[in-house]
Image (tube, rainbow, N blue to C red; front, side, top):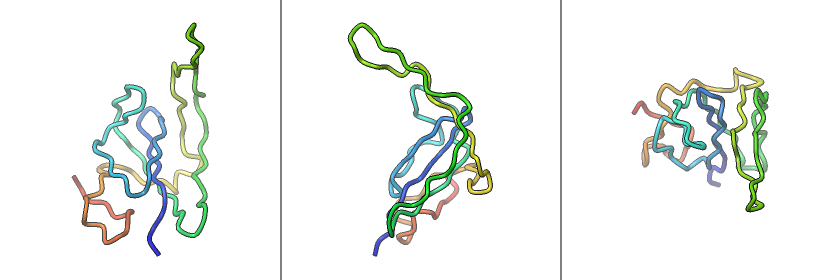
Length: 112
């Protein structure tokens, strides 16, 4: 049985990035809505035997949207979060995973 799961990252501004466990982040910076703050925290959820438990987050600023004349809803400001359980999160001094060096364990990281 292979590993299935998701990674959750928080940047310095509190923007949340969720990726597939096997997706490799190309940068140590947030890519959400033009933000370039460094990614500072990481946690993962194991979905191998069903749905894992997502990390609890405290919303410090909700997502702000507007509806323009074209009728579409646009994000004006992303939601910002802090972890409800900081012990579940790891510091991300260098969270990038080295491709091909994980022995099928997506939680193994190397210094970049």
